[in-house]
Image (tube, rainbow over the protein chains, first blue to last red):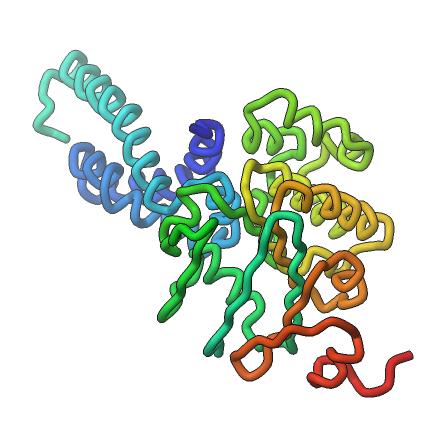
Length: 103
Length: 206
C-alpha cells in the first residue's frame, strides 16, 4: 500500500478541511465542529481540492488509488487524529474550568 | 464525439493515434483509463474483460495526461519514493543523468522538457502492462524528445504503449502501428501520405 501517497494527499487536503472546521467551530462550538471535521469537512476539502488541484488526482490514480480510496483514507486519518484531540480538549476544559457544557 | 473506435495493442507494440484537435484522442485515453465515463466500452486484457471503473484500482494501465499531474510544491527527490518502494526502482530513476541534476528542484521549478521526461520515467517504471501517453513530446526540446523515444523503445519490450501527439514524425518514428480518428471512427494508417489523404496534414509538406 502506498502509504506515502495517502499521506501526501492528506497533507494537500487538510488545510481546506481545517479552515472549514475552524469556521464551524466559531459558529457551532467544539463538538459540532468535530462532527463536521469528520463528515462535511471532508466533502468540502475534496470539493476544494477538485476545484483547485483537479489534475493532481492523476498522481494518485496512477498508483491505483481511486477518489473513493482517498476519501476513506482521509476519514480514517481524521478519526485517528480527531478523537484524541477532542478528548484532550474536553479533559483540559473540564480540569481547568470544570464545566464542559460551555462547548 | 467518439462513435465506433476499435483497436488492439500488444506487448512489444507502440500504437500511434492521430487526429485533428477535438476529434477525441485525449478523451479516448481517459475513457480507457476510466477517468471519463463512456456510454459503452468493451475492454479486454488477454481476453479477460476489464470494467472501466476497475482500471485504476487493478493497476493494469498507467496514464500520462496532457497536463502535469505532479504536486507542484514537491521536490523531484520526494516524489520518487512516493511512487516506488523498492530501492532498485528508486535508483533507476535517481541515477538517470537528467534526473540527478534536477533531483533537488520543486516540480514548479522544472522546465517543460524536464517535467515531461520525469513524468514519463515515473509512469513508465510503474509495474503496469500498458501505458497511455497523451502528448509526451509536446513543447519539449530535441534532447528530452530523444531520451523519451529511447526510453519508450526500451519499455515496449515489456509493455504495450498507446501514444497520441501532434508531433507526428516523432510518433511515426517509434510506433509499430497507427490509427487516425476522424468523424468518430478510426482507420489504420501507415505513412505521412495517408495522414495527408485523411486530411490530418496539409497537402504540401516541406
